[in-house]
Length: 294
Image 1 (spheres, rainbow, N blue to C red):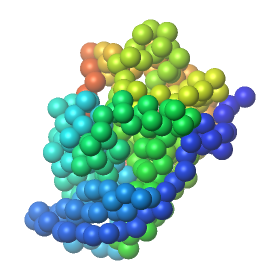
Image 2: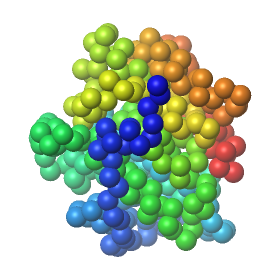
Image 3: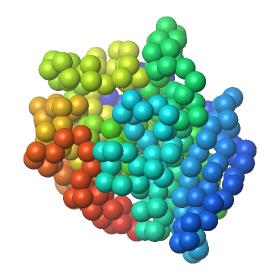
Image 4: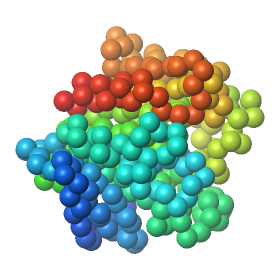
């Protein structure tokens, strides 16, 4: 029996905190603008970085950007502006020039919130029957609420994007929240049971450990909850973090959810490519969002 959204939410410990804008400072960049935000999410003030066209016309489509991990805890939301070694380049300016409002926030233990270790934060939550990733997804939902409420954003045209940890953030939140109209995710879609079988799970941080989840769901069945909304999956076939067999098994569970609407599910699978975004992935992602968000 496929997992339901409500049961997935329960296992994840999903609980969206309240969100409000504390401050915003604009930094013009010619044809686009960076907004340096302070958002109150629950009891904490969190850094947000937003990019948008300099001269927007009406309500625009938007992207909720999930930043990656990569062991670089100091970066966080700055990835939107600075990129990472496994990205084809920073996406904030690219999305803004393509007409999108794009928001990234610092996840717990990253960016300005890198005040304790991943182990410290995850262990405290695990003792309480919670998970660090459950907290991340919950706060990502709060960022979505802020983004959807902006006067320059069309709430019916919001996509989610991320690579690596941001990949999982994006499709897991899309599985829970219909406000995400389309999701594109790179380099972390996999069957976790297979990753454990192959020993590949230890290449991922403890943040991703959700107690009891694999008794009832896995990557493919979670991604299937996104259907019938459009979904783009990009993977490198030489990537060891989601090994090919783990991707194959996850895809086998995901694809049936799009039976009869196959045009809404796309796969970019590149031979010889490791844990990185390629020009083909970048072009495919921009075309995907252009098609479905308009």
